[in-house]
Amino acid sequence: MSTHGAGGDPEGACAYWVKLSEGQAFVLALRGTAFNGTDSSFYYKDHLALGRELAAALGAARSQFGHRFAPGAGVYSGFSQGATMGVGMIPPFGKELPHLVMIEGGYDYWNVAHARKFDRNGGQRVLFACGTGWCADKATKAAEWLRQAGLEARVEHAPGAGHTPGGEVEARVRAALPWLVAEQPGWKSQ
Image 1 (tube, rainbow, N blue to C red):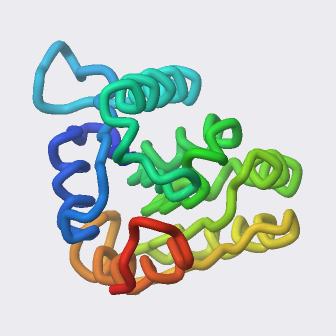
Image 2: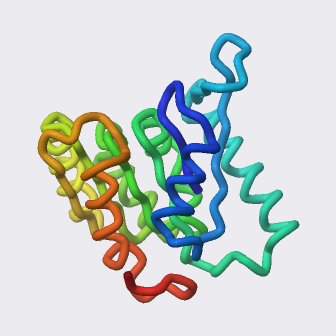
């Protein structure tokens, strides 16, 4: 499951994960709401709207492509707003999406109690990928809370890369994928 940042689009988010997974993942990319009625840039109104869109997308994909879903092997990825809004709604989806990739966001709303909800629902690992120092500092604290709740967490920082999912940040995500999905069916070691 892939989400974009404010002003992004699902096509770009999808292409990012098709490339990173070398085509081995079934990628669902959420759209959100169009900015100013355009068809080229989108945002998520709030975490509740994002959660509804995620539930609908998972339900539709399961009914049409259920054979492509490996139980407990799903990954939720969010960039910027998709990561930040994702934290608020992800705990109930832990069984289906136990692995999280939060790129340049998704660190502010974690605390031990929230992380325990994700853990109780099947959550396993959280990867934070940062291109800014601000993100890396905040993600390090969030990772501590996740570990206190019994989850595995890792922070990858590409100093100076900036607020982007690409470049050195993307390289860090690619390098961390074997850790993120270790022992999960349907994922090969990179």
